[in-house]
Structures are given as C-alpha cells and as structure tokens.
Length: 528
Image (cartoon, rainbow, N blue to C red):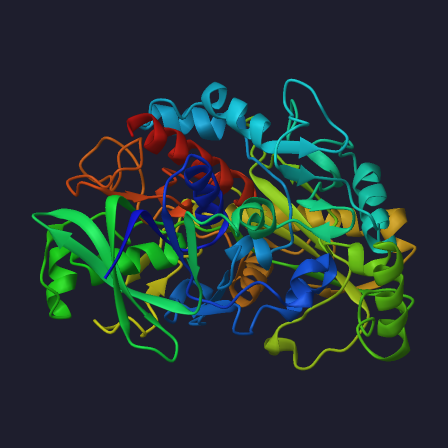
C-alpha cells in the first residue's frame, strides 16, 4: 500500500498539466499511465506522428457497427504514452470560439464563460509571433508557426482565396472564420507535448512518482468517498495506492467513463448486466459522446509532389539528415499545415473546419491506392449526433463497447454535404488546378446532387480524434461533475479531461483540455 496526497489516473494532456501544478505546489503526486514512456524518436519529430499510431503507444478503439455509416466499425485512435494525445496528434493549437465557452456558462457552468477562460489560455501560452489581448507570450506552452509549408498546402490556401474566402493569419484571434495555416504546439521544429512541457521539468522532483505500463483496475471507495485506486503493472502483480486528499481521473473521454463504471459508478442497469456492484447510480456516465465527424475530398496531383514515398529510401535519409542538422525541412512539418473555418448556414459562426493533407490516404474501399494526391477534409464543428460508451465486460483489460453516433442526426449530414461542396469548389480554382489533375472521390460533375454526396459521406465518414462529453460537467441531474470538476455525490473524486466538456468545442481539443486541467488545479489548490 502506497500513500500520496493526490493520485492522477492518466498522463495525457490533462494529467501532465495537473501533475505539474500540484507537484510545484508541494503536493505528493502519483501519476499513472497505461502505456510506455514517450521516448520514441517518432514522437519528437512533428511529421512522423503517424508512425506512432498503431503501436504500443496508442489505443485503437473500434466502434460497434454503425448503420448511419453503412455498417462500418469506426476506429478512434487515442494516446497511450506519456503526453497522451499530445504525443501522437497533429499539434494544432486551436482554442475554439468564444461562443463555445459562453455556451458552457449558460448550460450551468459558472466561471466557464469566454472571459473566464481566456486569461487561463493566455497565461499558459508562449506564442512566438502573437502577443495581444488574445494571446500570451510568456507561458509554458510553446505555440509557433509552421517551419515547413508544403507546395500543396500553399496551393490550397491560394485556391481558397480565389474561391472568395479571406485569409486569416490567426484562427485564435478576434474571428475564427477564413483560411490559412495552423499554429502548432511546436518549438524550434520539435513537438512540444504536454509531457515535454509540463512533466519533464518536474521528473526529478521527489514529490512526483510516475508509473508507466500500468492498467488501472478500479477505484477504492470507503463510505462513498474515493480513497485510492488499484492498478496492475505489466509483468508484476496488483498494487493499491491511497490518496490523502483526492483521486483525479484523466484517462480521456473513452477511458474515464470505463474506470467509473468498473468502480460501480455509472448507469445501474448497465453495471448490473456485468455483475458490478452499484456504488452510485449515475446515468450520465458514458452518455452523449460527441466527436468531430469528417468526410474527405480526394484529389490526384499532376506531378509526384505529395508526401507519398518521402519516408523511404534516399529521400527518407535526406529528410532525416536535414532535420537532425537544422530542425527544418519536411520532418519539421506537422503534415496538417493548412485548413480553415467556414460558416455554411449563415448564422455568423463557422460550423465546418478543414484539415488539408498533402497526401492521399484512401481507405480500403478504394483498394491499395498508391498515387500522389491530397485530401481536403471538412468536419462538422458542433455535431448534433451522440454516441455512447459502455463496458464490454467487468474485466479491466477488455476494450470498451461504444458507438460514435456519427450522422445519426440529419443536420450533421447536411453540414458535411455543405462542407464537401466548399471543398470541391476550392479544388476547382486555378491555384489547385495547376497541381491537381483530377478529383478522385467523390468525383463526377461539378454539381453532384445531395444524394451522391451523402453516399460518399456514408462510405468515408471518419473521426477527427476529438471524443468528448462522456462525463459532462453541469448543475443539472444528468451532469457527472460539478463546475469545479468534482464528481457529484462522490467526495474526493474529480474528473479532469475532455470528457467533462458540456459540449464539444468548435475546433481541436488539445489546447482546451490543457486549459481545463490548469483550471482544475486552481480549484484543487484553492480548496486545499
């Protein structure tokens, strides 16, 4: 039996951020991570994150077959290493829209409005170019412009302007809409994950204990309050740890509800199906999963200028040497260099985001396509569809059972079709026509009917890797945590990750998750 002040389950973006604040404040912290250390060379090099996905440093969660996407099982990769998603993502620094956070406030989360969270974003940020009322320049989290701009990314940005969309050099500034290049959580051409930024500086602090390759098996509850947890380390026996103050779950929107339910905290009927004693009936645990759904437009290029083949042979050696010597070139790219935000329904708020890839990764439905190309990927920023996370069994090592719910609400299909029409319009502009020889899919006439585009969406819809909202915060009966992230009805237990979002924000979720963790530290230390 080991005793600490605080135990954090999950060393991802939230867990690393929270551990830094607590340890720096003099608290004794146990930080538990299911995966191995983040010591792969492919993590530090921005362009090689795809080589980490599918290894022991990632989870590949597979949904149940989903009717709205043609009965397909949809994969959602998640980080399984120190730094979590921030160690395997495309590093985009996006905070969302002010209205997102004002919406959180209005949903019963006081202190979560835009004017409340903006100072937190600013104190965390160290932006290499921007320093104004929207941006910080002295925080711990580096934010920088791309060190590499691929010709296809440049062509897309030009073409989008030719299509009538204005250039935006700051998607986190006064207005989100427009097209341009993303800023990233990188510095000097290197990835700056939450592990590198928040965990590395405190690794030698005697108040911190980090355990990797450890599967949390359940919480310890006494008189209804959390007192610790149990875990199994690979190759060793079970371990129990106690928390003098609190236990914090930071295992992500798919992992955290699993740990809750394994511990008897969840929907009573579902727990009974698996023979788990109900410690507290909490119907909201695992409900209303939200994620950004995307559908690609594939295009073939005239010349072999995409990323295809750049990771093999002499080209790979040349890129590697350039990166090792100068920290620039192709390996300094985050791959998803460009994109944009579009208002398709005219309400003044962008509802579609583009992620543009200078390579074509066509799915199995097209066979083994090895041709130079690119992708324009519109995604729905505020999906109305909802999924659900459940247990597959009472065995902690078993994967979860879940559905994304993608396209189960008709509005999401309509928004994606509108996004596809914008993507196809941009693709037909002179800047892209100079480098693109044909639209590979959906293909066909410029004015394809909605039915044809809907069929393309059902065949190709995919995640943008932003699961959220499965343990949402609020003050209503369905909320799992209160606005201070305390689990309702379970003393000494908090949740601190993207699962607490009352609604999914309009953009990539890494920066908001770090903000959530920093605010959580404020609550904990203020109460302590």
